[in-house]
Image (cartoon, rainbow, N blue to C red; front, side, top):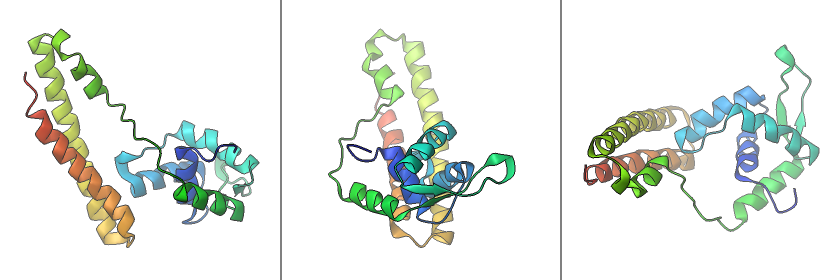
Length: 170
């Protein structure tokens, strides 16, 4: 992969450090380990797996039920992942639809703006509950303090966003 791994490929290689997984298992494992802060869709996973295999970063196992194959990270994949971990952090570019819509808040009617903020509040309260659940699960089953720290960021982010929503003039 000229130019290094993209974030999705890196996430897959990181998850495969825990052992062989099928594409569907990778999606589920990402949800458990990374929570809603870094989601991987089935289409992203299945698009990246053959690319990673073609570069020698992972190996596909023998097809199992419904032609699914468990993938195993190779030594080259571990080196590529280590290189990605050590590379400079790319710029963070949040693409938040709420921020985009609020950026044009003066074009909303008061009713629509109030509805938008109420919808966002409901979504982020639900997300906060999911993050809290993820933190509780990790505290029980995953001794990795960095996975826990990532999940705790989700709790802090959602709490901060909910406080910020209270400041939006509706």
